[in-house]
Length: 345
Image 1 (cartoon, rainbow, N blue to C red):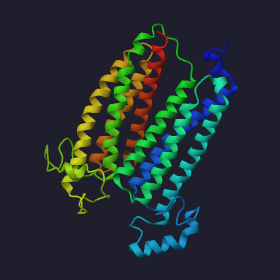
Image 2 (image 1 turned 135 degrees about the vertical axis):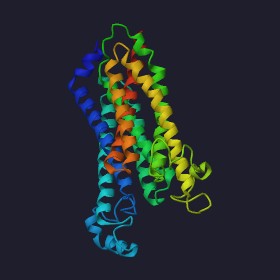
Image 3 (image 1 turned 45 degrees about the horizontal axis):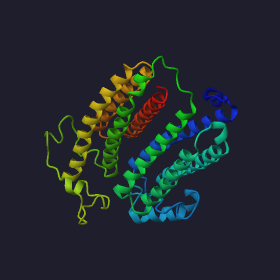
């Protein structure tokens, strides 16, 4: 009978696992590239989809881009050759990821007897990636509508979570002296993913609405513990970027409300993840994961402080997105190991 360790050691399984691992790393990079494109105001560098003014390369659309730059009065606007390359670079990497995910699905179905695993999870992953492609299209064609931009970010993190779960499923379960303590982490890991997901959505909404500098100080905001806020306009989902639901310019009080919600969420999520990290670090068989979670959390808090006090430096803002993805991946690993440990009890 083929055991779990034998399956994991077979050449086909090793190649499959490496392909999944590469896709996960590429997804993490893509999330950070997407953050860079968004924060550098290059999301409309090519205002059509999937090409750039109908061309494969921005250099082929030089005349169209030059005309758009002239109309907007200089390269300070949303269109420029540099921004077009940033936007298309993001799309090229996304296409590469899509091709790799298709290869993963094909391999999952072809090797389903060797791996002795259902191929439906990789198939679901492909569905998520296709939906992500649609969100990428809508991000451009709907002119950076905040709900679409936030959904696109969340879809990227869901793609990463599914890839990490799939990769972890290819690895043999560690040998535990007692699997029960690790299994007991399951509900807390899933709760942590839920709490982190809400906070990431708040962060995505903050970024999509360019509300990162609405509060330029810490721990107060605009020199007050609770400045003027307007939550109704801030969290109205179906509105255009920078506009209220009535079409007026979005007031500072709405941007402040978005930033304050993100800060409150950070305190709640950070406190829970701190407790969870300590608990995992104290669990035999999962100690290293706990310490990694605590280290990533400390880095994320540090980056959040730098983003506010240093006026949203690009490197810190992009890294802030990346570490959020790393936290997600770590919690997925904990949840997956806990679930598999429960089967051993």
